[in-house]
Amino acid sequence: MVTSVMPTYGRIDIAFERGEGSYLYSTDGRRYLDFASGIATNSLGHAHPHLVAKVQEQAGKLWHVSNLYNIPEQQRFADRLVANSFADTCFFCNSGAEAMEGALKVARKYHFVNGDADREEMVCATGSFHGRTLATLSAGDNDKYREGFGPRPGGFTHVAFGNLNEMRAAMSDKTAAIVVEPIQGEGGINPATSEYLQALREIADEFGALLVFDEVQCGMGRTGHLFAYEISGVAPDIMALAKGLGSGFPVGAVLASEKGASGMSPGTHGSTYGGNPMAMAAGNAVLDVMLEDGFLDTVQKNGTYLRQQLEAVVSRHPKVLESVRGTGLMQGIKCVKPNLELMTATREAGLLTVVAGDNVLRILPPLTVSKGEIDEAVGYLDTAFAAASD
Image 1 (tube, one colour):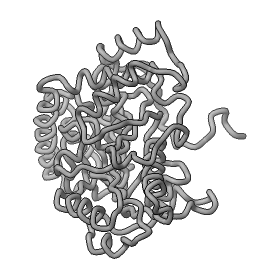
Image 2 (tube, one colour):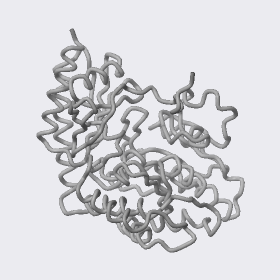
Image 3 (cartoon, helix red, strand yellow):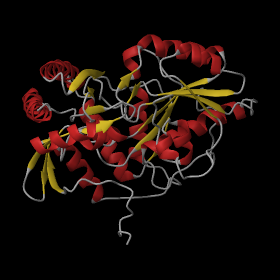
Image 4 (cartoon, one colour):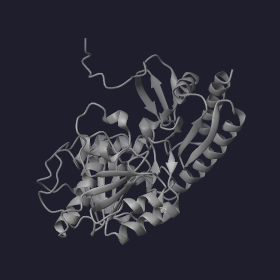
């Protein structure tokens, strides 16, 4: 018999009743150190006082109005994102998949409005993940997620991530955009090199295509920069954000340059809930914290410290682990033993982690994590991996 909650998740038999900072407390009273962060979503940890206060304040005033009207906090959030990014304009939605759907629409509409309606092809990367809608499943590269859902939407080609020869060979006068994650998350924490991203920018410009970055997972401070593209200095034309944008409150956004968004006009795209007052209160509260002096510097320092500690963990458990990869507080451990087994072992030790492709174990602490909490996590990892190596 089917359960009342549709059985689309392979759930772990734990329920959490509250959280505080980097910790979650289960209904049976156990405390866990959360280095999964809702899959890179709880960017400010759990129950951050400033975020809680701003959302509670907004909840007592106004939850929702239609985008038929001006929403002052939405305008303020857009102004702040534009002021701190490459972008000139923003569209707000509710999730990463919606943000990527919007980004794809913006890219195709650009060419249509500019007299090149045949430019519909998106060149994407192997190992990518862009969401669970039909279109974003086609943009991503995982046949397991596509199986059983009928014909795939057309217009998507995949080339090897990091391979510029394949990318150039795939370009044509039908190409609307190059679509890539600056750091692949679901695919196994695979950072693109600055040289690769710079070359993609050059190739897109040469062929008259747009460059679309998916920063749903790697954006919003996770690398120690507000946006991952800042590391390379390569600005896209369009970028998708979500996850850490609301630190757990559902917020997504499509950011675009004036050029990239030049095809958009009233009626071309929309959202019922996107940009509603509650979501904007959360998003603005997140920016309040992330834009404080020293916040991102601390994330960078803690990211370096985390990387050093993880490399030491790998060296102590060569039968279980192979290597570390990632940037900032978005790290992955390439495993020798099955990553799902190791995720279970770390959880039993007291640390929450999450698996990714290529047999990688993702380490995604809140951006507010302390060095002491990193040391505590290392102790749990050592305990779990020592038992796994027996």
